Length: 489
Ligand SMILES: Cc1ncc(COP(=O)(O)O)c(C=O)c1O
Image (cartoon, rainbow, N blue to C red):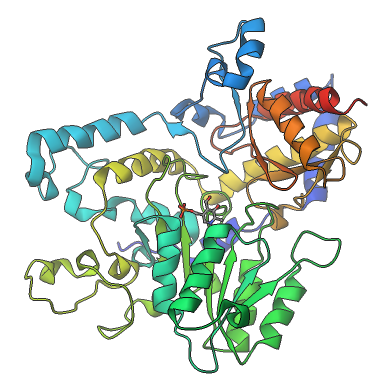
């Protein structure tokens, strides 16, 4: 039967409990334990975690490999113990199967060379003729981003390249409709991509970029302000390009509401999302929401390795734009039936695969496959259920440790519907770059891998696939030590 990821399934995955409900869950757990210490709570949560066994499918760097933590590791005799990895929002851990799948592609190259394009010596499900590209993982990707059909997704290139390709097709400015709406503090690559697309069309970014800002004294965008910016520019807005979740603040954008508002405002406004911090992190229902296009990377939450292959979503409504549609085109986007005729007649593949330009490296697909093997043991809903509980436990422990509101502030909302996959911490009330940097250094010296981001943010992300509640507890203990070493209580 043809694959179809129903809207209902994708939308149901997006329904999450509130922060108050999660807090009540933790209070109930504590009340039911004979000994309600954080350690006993973490143990109980880990024992009940249906995803607990999945961390064995990942390789965690050893403490001794972190230069800043060598002294700490040696002092505690823990050089080969795993570090506390909370940086999956930057680079996900290596799936243990990655080496095997990569080596098999190398072997196929060695043993079959050009033949492996059509006759691969490896066996499905993990090895396919190279000419098939990502055929075998498209359903997993569709489920990951809430595409309804396989032809709405494809793996290709890297994220910013894909944003450019999507804009080449969907940003078609006219004399009156030429503006692109984005956010203040957009990731630099997105900003540059938008600016240069505008320039490519001979326009000035100063006139054509609508930049939505947080209100004075706030750092999170409000939906009503995004809607107001759409309304104010209803006659000139050509495109909205926003993140699914914000790289710095961790804010999850209300993608459904933004898309619905844009679609109601004018049929010619195209809506796209950069899902760098959303794909693999939060459940998505791109088809059901009516999003026109989206692009993502796979090296963060999707654990496919540094510089791994990106992906795009193109809504089914744009599946057949015809041979005259404007896109930056290449031969792999052309139908298999006609591709090798070499007759130079345009014959695009239906849907997102019609946007592919070049052939994909089987080495890049190998690591993505290795990661999706683990994802496929779960669902977006089960991953999100754990992710929001890990964050709720973090919140609970920060409060219990007396850190919250005093030495630690939260930039990211802990309302699950408003946050992506990471939590952005502020040291004190924020605003002090040097203090945040020093706390980050002190964490690294204790074997915690998370990151500091200008101007004053420490980002941490316990991951549904490989983090435990015990990891969250260990983090809060080490954070307390780190903070106290920098700012005495
Ligand atoms: C939000 C966002 N957009 C774009 C990029 C750039 O991705 P790439 O280097 O794969 O083009 C990143 C990278 O971290 C990102 O976080």
